[in-house]
Length: 477
Image (cartoon, rainbow, N blue to C red):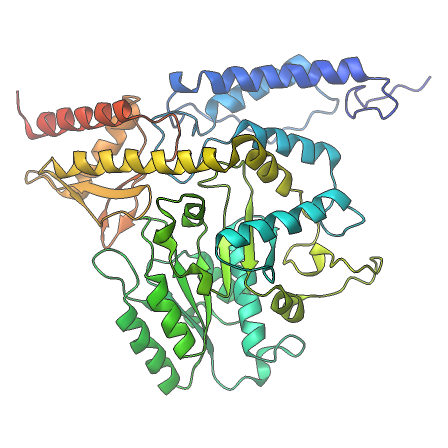
């Protein structure tokens, strides 16, 4: 009999003949992952271990034990957002249900390209997005698609906005007299420049608008920039407001921006990749007042809703505009009254990300999510109080979300150097991890209070260690 080099547990046998081997492998991996995550607080938020090489492919497959040993090293060397002191980025600890949803989606391996390839998940995606759109103040005309991240969501929103403003769907940009331009705050996400590049507009088509002292779009400067662009022969077609900026977490004044968009007949897109989750909090949803005026919205449940990556969506106030301005029918698909999602998405073949979102919503419920959001603000209020109690610290702006940017400003050392040393000291001591972005020409420590296991006690511990560092670095005994 010819020797087989394919392991007996390489696939799950649809006849059930290798169920014991498959079960053993899955349980071994699951046990390893659970052990790792359940002890996450005992490891540093960012691993300091050396990374091995991954360039070797064996001629014959390794044993389960050998693979598990390699997996153990990967788990221990990876970023550790489950640590309660990991508060440096918008990377949340995922819900258990979203992890299981990821596993189920991968196991079923349905393709969101079309209804016949994902009969359950296609309907689930349409219905879930329609329901979520109502939280944003849209009606039953709204709709959208899931995408692999906010960058693609912003790309698709601007593509639809461009196609809606100019007759370019079939013949491209050559017939346009003047450069199409978009307006966004100077601190808007860099995915907008990438989108402009991919859409053939050039990165210069994203015109930066000044921000105020609170890192929000200056609407007076927005009007100035619109008028300047028109006087220069450019063709404004969209404004992008941000609900939760990457560095400071601030929210642009959406109602005022919406009025300007209406006045100048421009498409309004709101990048609510982060802050969009606030629609699920009765106490804080008014921070997004006016978002129902947007023509399109980017929303990433992979952030503040704790869904395993990737999980993002773009929602349109009028789904018919999406279908009219973006749909490319696939000739190899069966005709159906249901619009295949691959025909109206920038992506074709796509993972069924919707399941992990739906499962988490079913498991945690709306009251559970509201509690997570509200408790995050309680932590932020405590964090801000601690900063304001210390003369050697300053805020870059008053936070609108659970993101806070601050820095030390000692007299005895350049502030940028001090903040870098503090960041490294806190990480080395296992106290916490802050990111260190450059903003307005200075280095700032950024805290994202997203982890549900971060407590007020943790915050006090971190600031006590900051005080020790400040006194030690100053030379106090």
